[in-house]
Length: 324
View 1 (spheres, rainbow, N blue to C red):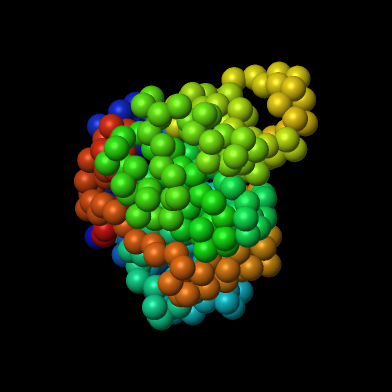
View 2: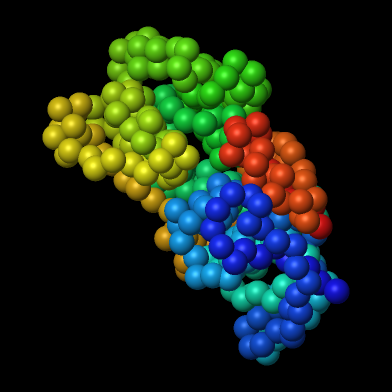
């Protein structure tokens, strides 16, 4: 009997229910997967809370890794028995077996395990988007990564360091600063303890950073802008502290004709060629050893509520994976 996490109402972790399901057979363009590991991300929490509404009842989760069990008509790029992973715009990944569109599936190289894949599809592809597409980091650039000990942060810091950047990160505690330094940060600053703007300016001889990667949102917006060099780029890609406030465009002008973007991964992987190119670059940098990726904590899929509670309490670092 297959099972999945379902919600019929929004709220705290307790609204998640572990229910028996019938995945059915794949239709045209679909596959049935036996899932082995599922990625657990903050967007899942936003959807569970209702801050990013879903039609109810609903599943949760948008990424996983597993084995193809059956394929529907017209599916050519994957076959039964293939080890695959995906990030999908359709929720429902919190399941041990499911039918999904074949379009977002990518084959896993032999050296990539299921838990590793589930820990890096969303986070790794987001890091690729930040460092290679939103702003192409160059040797000698100074970059600032907020939440540097988090899942995206750990990958982004390692990758930026491999690209030759001066990497500055912010974190929430001294313990997380150690994690950030172990993952490529040249300078790890603790929010609430360190004067982030002053120390960023000191580390860059007063110039400021070329780009800020900010997933925190409301609490760090103005700080991020104050850390940028003239004509620098602020990349907002999350809002763990709350939605971004309205931005006065004069704030960009006064700080040196700054650039600002608010982006999401889905807009950069909607076309299959773009997805394949991004995945190839991600897998290559991981295979090279320049970026080391894996889950920092693993919970049983049936106990996904515990994972959500730990993430909301800021008790986790890096990637959180749900094991089937």
